[in-house]
Length: 384
Image (cartoon, rainbow, N blue to C red; front, side, top):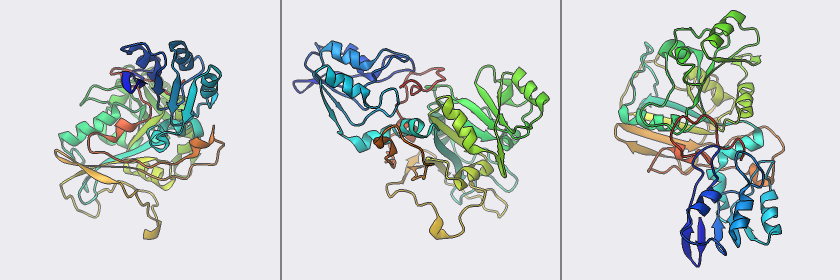
């Protein structure tokens, strides 16, 4: 936002990956000369040549007198250099305004820069009594159209949607955003230790249209891998652990490919593994006003779980349910204990909790995501 004499003269946001950043968009939208104005930004302006020229030079050339930003950019290519460049050019720079809010807004980006791993969202739909399927395995559909459309909005904003091979074999999902026009096309990721994904699976049959990655163990069958690759899938081998593929290895590879937000949709075994290993950052839970019952009916989090109630994960106090037309949506960011790694700068270590609002899905807060609609595959954070 550009302000001069107390009046807003220009606003902008990062519309698409590879396109102009918010600073440049605001300058282009100016209704008057920006000379002498103050620029309010959500992150330190970039000072390097990536997909676009540096925003610092655009601000300097426009005659901006002051820049107000909440935090430094943790990207090693920036990390304070943008502020230094602006100050060297004579601009007044203030840092720290609304810092907590900015850290929350940009939390997925900060995690990618700090840990080189994506922000992980666990998502499931359940009945009021906590079941995700009946005793026969039937789960279509526990929630109604409004809840499913709401969940599809999140699919249309993340970089990857991840499931286990059992979900592929049982449900034959497409894992695409169909209820609304997506803002990016998420890569579909399957964890399949022994490459049991069949050629007839809809994921495989559509792999040339929608990016599809299959992670397998180091000793998985070569001919099965070749079959999937010929169909358009990408097969990646990662180490195995005692309970399946190494989730940390999978997340690290996704981070290396600049994926900022990953949505884990199940099944219960995979969700339980992420829960047991504390490898998630946010929960999206859809609750339908129905009762299923049954000892053998599935619950959402398999695995080991906690031994005592005192060890249970306590959600933040501001967690609340949002009423949808045919159910409820619960969302919360969770406190995590990330592996010890040196952060790009101190602000990158700050933790945050979500403050869910009732006006839209939590996916609206997925970092500095691009807002362009259409088949955009990459994350805008790759070069930011």
